[in-house]
Length: 178
Image (tube, rainbow, N blue to C red; front, top):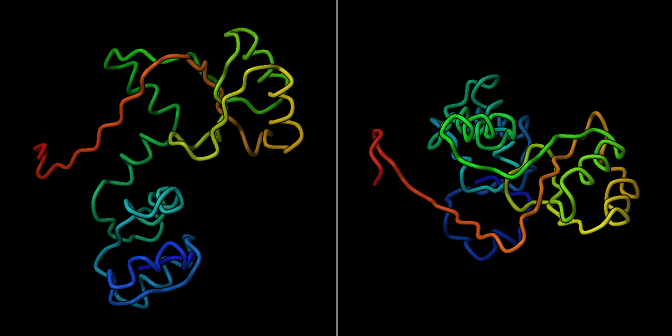
Protein backbone atom coordinates (compact mmCIF):
# COMPACT_ATOMS: atom_id res chain seq x y z
CA UNK A 1 0.00 0.00 0.00
CA UNK A 2 1.20 3.47 -0.84
CA UNK A 3 -0.21 6.23 1.34
CA UNK A 4 1.24 9.67 2.00
CA UNK A 5 -1.20 10.38 4.86
CA UNK A 6 -0.53 8.29 7.97
CA UNK A 7 -3.78 9.52 9.58
CA UNK A 8 -5.92 7.78 6.99
CA UNK A 9 -3.96 4.56 7.23
CA UNK A 10 -3.70 4.37 11.04
CA UNK A 11 -7.19 2.95 11.42
CA UNK A 12 -6.44 0.03 9.07
CA UNK A 13 -2.84 -0.80 9.97
CA UNK A 14 -3.35 -4.53 9.39
CA UNK A 15 -4.71 -4.21 5.83
CA UNK A 16 -1.38 -4.40 3.98
CA UNK A 17 1.72 -6.47 4.54
CA UNK A 18 3.90 -3.56 3.43
CA UNK A 19 3.26 0.18 3.61
CA UNK A 20 5.07 2.96 1.77
CA UNK A 21 4.60 6.49 3.13
CA UNK A 22 5.17 8.18 -0.22
CA UNK A 23 3.40 10.74 -2.36
CA UNK A 24 0.84 9.40 -4.79
CA UNK A 25 2.57 10.56 -7.95
CA UNK A 26 3.24 8.69 -11.17
CA UNK A 27 6.98 8.65 -10.50
CA UNK A 28 6.73 7.27 -6.91
CA UNK A 29 4.14 4.66 -7.81
CA UNK A 30 6.24 3.45 -10.74
CA UNK A 31 9.38 3.36 -8.55
CA UNK A 32 7.59 1.15 -6.02
CA UNK A 33 5.88 -0.91 -8.74
CA UNK A 34 9.28 -1.72 -10.24
CA UNK A 35 11.00 -2.22 -6.85
CA UNK A 36 8.34 -4.72 -5.79
CA UNK A 37 8.16 -6.39 -9.22
CA UNK A 38 4.42 -5.96 -8.83
CA UNK A 39 2.01 -7.90 -10.97
CA UNK A 40 -0.56 -5.11 -10.82
CA UNK A 41 -1.74 -1.95 -9.10
CA UNK A 42 -5.16 -1.09 -7.67
CA UNK A 43 -6.12 2.57 -8.08
CA UNK A 44 -9.84 2.40 -7.40
CA UNK A 45 -9.66 2.72 -3.60
CA UNK A 46 -7.20 5.59 -3.32
CA UNK A 47 -9.34 8.65 -4.00
CA UNK A 48 -8.78 11.28 -6.67
CA UNK A 49 -4.96 11.23 -6.91
CA UNK A 50 -4.59 7.64 -8.15
CA UNK A 51 -7.55 8.12 -10.50
CA UNK A 52 -5.66 11.06 -12.03
CA UNK A 53 -2.54 8.99 -12.77
CA UNK A 54 -4.21 5.67 -13.70
CA UNK A 55 -4.08 6.25 -17.46
CA UNK A 56 -0.42 7.29 -17.35
CA UNK A 57 0.47 4.28 -15.18
CA UNK A 58 -1.03 1.99 -17.80
CA UNK A 59 0.08 3.76 -20.97
CA UNK A 60 3.49 5.24 -20.12
CA UNK A 61 4.52 2.99 -17.25
CA UNK A 62 3.06 -0.19 -18.73
CA UNK A 63 1.74 -1.04 -15.25
CA UNK A 64 -1.12 -3.51 -15.10
CA UNK A 65 -4.01 -1.63 -13.53
CA UNK A 66 -6.34 -4.05 -11.79
CA UNK A 67 -10.06 -3.36 -11.73
CA UNK A 68 -11.64 -0.64 -13.82
CA UNK A 69 -9.73 0.05 -17.03
CA UNK A 70 -8.01 3.47 -16.86
CA UNK A 71 -9.57 4.34 -20.23
CA UNK A 72 -12.98 3.96 -18.60
CA UNK A 73 -11.87 5.99 -15.57
CA UNK A 74 -10.82 8.71 -18.01
CA UNK A 75 -14.22 8.59 -19.72
CA UNK A 76 -15.88 9.24 -16.37
CA UNK A 77 -13.41 11.91 -15.19
CA UNK A 78 -13.03 13.88 -18.43
CA UNK A 79 -16.11 16.10 -18.60
CA UNK A 80 -16.12 16.26 -22.42
CA UNK A 81 -15.98 12.48 -22.83
CA UNK A 82 -18.55 11.91 -20.09
CA UNK A 83 -20.91 14.45 -21.62
CA UNK A 84 -20.62 12.82 -25.06
CA UNK A 85 -21.53 9.44 -23.53
CA UNK A 86 -24.58 10.94 -21.82
CA UNK A 87 -25.64 12.61 -25.07
CA UNK A 88 -25.18 9.35 -27.03
CA UNK A 89 -27.51 7.42 -24.70
CA UNK A 90 -30.07 10.21 -24.33
CA UNK A 91 -29.41 11.20 -20.71
CA UNK A 92 -30.23 14.82 -19.94
CA UNK A 93 -27.60 16.94 -18.21
CA UNK A 94 -27.47 20.51 -16.98
CA UNK A 95 -25.86 23.12 -19.20
CA UNK A 96 -22.10 23.21 -18.60
CA UNK A 97 -18.93 24.68 -20.03
CA UNK A 98 -15.19 24.38 -19.46
CA UNK A 99 -13.79 27.88 -19.09
CA UNK A 100 -10.36 29.44 -18.86
CA UNK A 101 -11.09 33.02 -17.81
CA UNK A 102 -13.20 34.84 -15.27
CA UNK A 103 -14.98 36.80 -18.02
CA UNK A 104 -16.05 33.56 -19.76
CA UNK A 105 -17.27 32.18 -16.42
CA UNK A 106 -19.19 35.37 -15.71
CA UNK A 107 -20.86 35.32 -19.13
CA UNK A 108 -21.82 31.65 -18.82
CA UNK A 109 -23.24 32.07 -15.29
CA UNK A 110 -25.34 35.01 -16.47
CA UNK A 111 -26.61 33.04 -19.48
CA UNK A 112 -27.84 30.07 -17.40
CA UNK A 113 -28.66 32.15 -14.26
CA UNK A 114 -27.38 31.53 -10.76
CA UNK A 115 -26.80 29.28 -8.88
CA UNK A 116 -23.97 27.51 -10.70
CA UNK A 117 -21.60 24.75 -9.66
CA UNK A 118 -17.87 25.40 -10.09
CA UNK A 119 -15.25 22.64 -10.04
CA UNK A 120 -11.82 21.82 -11.44
CA UNK A 121 -12.15 20.54 -15.01
CA UNK A 122 -10.95 16.96 -14.45
CA UNK A 123 -13.15 16.08 -11.48
CA UNK A 124 -16.70 14.78 -11.48
CA UNK A 125 -16.85 14.00 -7.78
CA UNK A 126 -17.22 16.31 -4.79
CA UNK A 127 -13.58 17.37 -4.65
CA UNK A 128 -13.22 21.17 -4.69
CA UNK A 129 -16.78 21.81 -5.89
CA UNK A 130 -18.52 25.02 -4.87
CA UNK A 131 -22.08 26.21 -5.43
CA UNK A 132 -22.05 29.88 -6.40
CA UNK A 133 -25.17 32.00 -5.88
CA UNK A 134 -24.06 35.41 -7.16
CA UNK A 135 -21.60 37.26 -9.36
CA UNK A 136 -19.69 38.50 -6.30
CA UNK A 137 -19.22 34.91 -5.07
CA UNK A 138 -18.06 33.88 -8.54
CA UNK A 139 -15.54 36.71 -8.59
CA UNK A 140 -14.28 35.80 -5.11
CA UNK A 141 -13.93 32.11 -5.98
CA UNK A 142 -12.22 32.55 -9.33
CA UNK A 143 -10.20 35.75 -9.03
CA UNK A 144 -9.05 35.84 -5.41
CA UNK A 145 -7.71 32.31 -5.56
CA UNK A 146 -6.50 32.62 -9.19
CA UNK A 147 -8.09 29.26 -9.87
CA UNK A 148 -9.03 29.84 -13.48
CA UNK A 149 -6.54 30.11 -16.33
CA UNK A 150 -5.72 28.35 -19.60
CA UNK A 151 -3.56 25.94 -17.56
CA UNK A 152 -6.26 25.39 -14.93
CA UNK A 153 -9.69 25.51 -16.57
CA UNK A 154 -12.83 25.16 -14.47
CA UNK A 155 -16.14 23.56 -15.34
CA UNK A 156 -19.22 25.58 -14.55
CA UNK A 157 -22.54 23.78 -14.54
CA UNK A 158 -26.03 25.12 -14.07
CA UNK A 159 -26.91 24.04 -10.50
CA UNK A 160 -30.43 22.66 -10.37
CA UNK A 161 -31.95 23.39 -6.98
CA UNK A 162 -34.15 20.71 -5.47
CA UNK A 163 -32.80 18.04 -7.80
CA UNK A 164 -31.93 14.61 -6.50
CA UNK A 165 -28.60 13.02 -7.38
CA UNK A 166 -28.26 9.25 -7.31
CA UNK A 167 -24.93 7.42 -7.18
CA UNK A 168 -24.77 3.78 -8.13
CA UNK A 169 -21.79 1.56 -7.42
CA UNK A 170 -21.63 -1.83 -9.10
CA UNK A 171 -19.24 -4.71 -9.55
CA UNK A 172 -19.01 -6.73 -12.75
CA UNK A 173 -17.08 -9.76 -13.84
CA UNK A 174 -16.65 -10.87 -17.43
CA UNK A 175 -19.11 -8.22 -18.57
CA UNK A 176 -21.85 -9.45 -16.22
CA UNK A 177 -23.15 -7.20 -13.46
CA UNK A 178 -22.86 -8.94 -10.11
